[in-house]
Picture 1 (cartoon, one colour):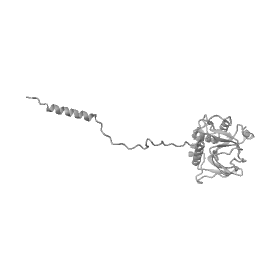
Picture 2: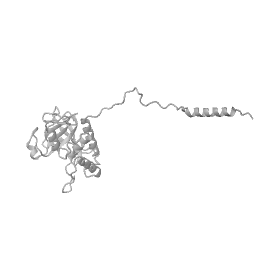
Picture 3: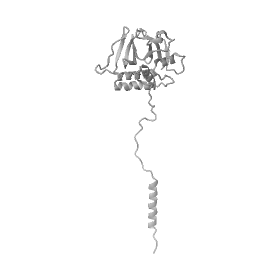
Length: 254
């Protein structure tokens, strides 16, 4: 019986079609266009200056403490007032205490509680925490709970990249982001800029200035982070007060 070739031809064609189908690439639907065209400029943003960072962080903590404020009038501070008089804050309230402990232990491993169960003065720890939050490493701003440690650091001969430079408060009008420091008594009271001595000081960060006034925010003022309006001369220099003898202005660099 003669052998037909038709089944063999059909089998070969079928095999070829299967092979071709396996090698073909399925067509995908077009995807969405890119969000930013390749030719468009990349988005950029400006990094806030050291001054802006210090002011922002100080105001943030001040708001968390209920925005308490006072002013120096006739050499004496007025009564502390809060944004909400029905909700006065205090360092020993749990939410506030957690902030104070954060400032302190960002600066030292010494215990924050004194021998009689009191909180140790934490105003310098607050300034140190501001410096850390603003991006200053310990090599550029000392980790300390004593204001004198960083005052002394910037009273020395300036180093390249120093974030602050010591200025005479009698001649230098402070600007937002600067630190202003006054003597609190003891041996330090017998010295004047630039020959300051180790002793007790208090420093605040300037957050705003105006005609005849300078607003500063500091820690451990009546046991809170508070804003104080200080008197200034017509050209913006701090006016010495009986309760505040100005020692130095630490001018922010940048």
